[in-house]
Image (cartoon, rainbow, N blue to C red; front, top):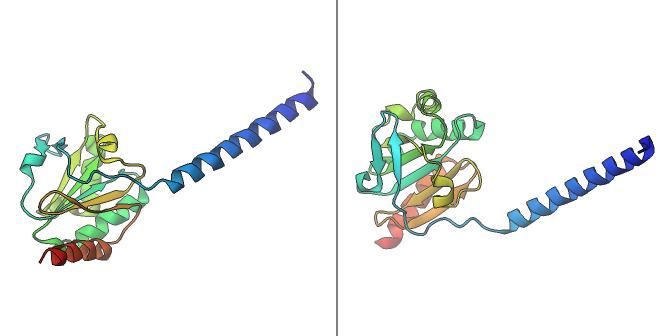
Length: 175
């Protein structure tokens, strides 16, 4: 094979790879995320190693925050929610990761979520949550009402004010 034909094959290969990537992103962008309409049963582990299941959920609305400890957006989200924790009294937030427990502990300490009584850091040791909850990106936040019905799902970064508004608007619709 000559140098000229090698370069031609390389250029064609790069072009096809780039075209495939563009098509893949375009197809994924059009499809809206499909989150479970009803909170599915799950088994996760607390940072202390105890099993945490849906049966242990408290009364009130529940926010599920799926994160990666190395994600800067996830880091910001954890800090912001911890800062506004008093606004979410009567509700609970579960911070869920598939990362090793040491990373989850470090994230909990760095963001301050470990100091909030109604915030729980949980680890998915079996890597089931991405499929169970239809996750495509991190962070993803899902809000469920008292009856465990989906209020709203957010992919990417979303601020505490938006989450609080969605939770309050849903509560006021029922009255």
